Length: 124
Image (tube, rainbow, N blue to C red):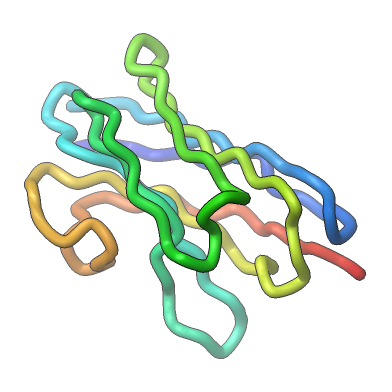
C-alpha cells in the first residue's frame, strides 16, 4: 500500500503562483510514476501532469504546458506541482496519484493510489 497526502492548495489571484506537494509513504519503492489530476465542479477528473519516479520523465496536459512544472524528490518521497500564471479555469480540486505500472499516463483508471485532494481557487 501507498499513502498520499497533498498540501499547498489555496486561493490565489489570476496570474499568481502556487506549489502543490504530495508526500508518499508506505511501499514507495514499488512506484513507477506519479501524477496530478484535477476535478472542477460538474466536470470529470482530468489529467494535469505526471512524472516517472525513476527517470523523471515528465508528461503534461496541453492546457498546462509552459505554465506548470512537475517534479519529484525521491529522497523525500515527495511530488511537486509548481503552478504559474494561474487562470480562473485552473480552479479545481487537485489530486495526487501513484501507479505501479507502465501505461497511459493520462488515464485516471490506471493509477493505483489517490490522495484526498487539495482545493485550488483562482480569482479574477
